[in-house]
Length: 68
Image (cartoon, rainbow, N blue to C red; front, side, top):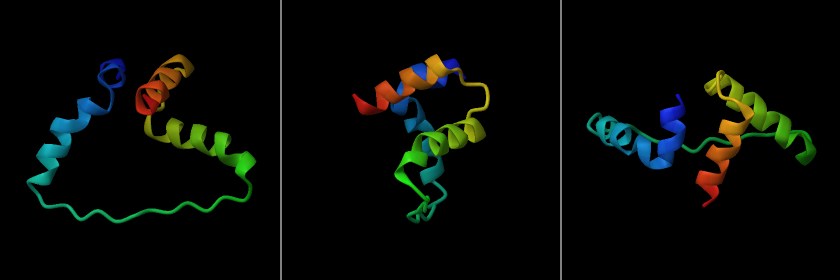
């Protein structure tokens, strides 16, 4: 898992290329939330759902890579 984080968004390029062979359809997704102050908690919950073993330090590194 740490390898995926260190490779950043480019580490998933080969996976995206593989999936493109199957001609996926992409649809926008929307999220409704009660209050902007709830966004940090929502972000943590989504992160835990998809990357349950990620540490806080790994999460910070991942966010820095995406914002760079």
